Length: 63
Image 1 (spheres, rainbow, N blue to C red):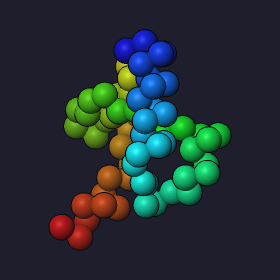
Image 2 (cartoon, rainbow, N blue to C red; image 1 turned 45 degrees about the vertical axis):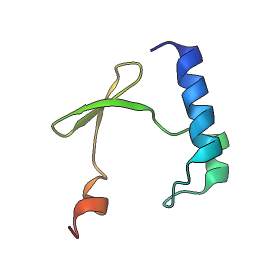
Image 3 (tube, one colour; image 1 turned 90 degrees about the vertical axis):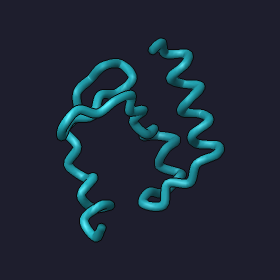
């Protein structure tokens, strides 16, 4: 995914999606990670960087 597409998607995210576990003002300095896919415990961002998903259990533990 090219930088222009990534930046457009991040801008749309900031304008239209409320992230209840974060301060929206922080996203001006620290934009959200644009996850393209997941595999096991790993997330892959739009540039292909592998990131370990160490927080998803916070949201699914009670289910």
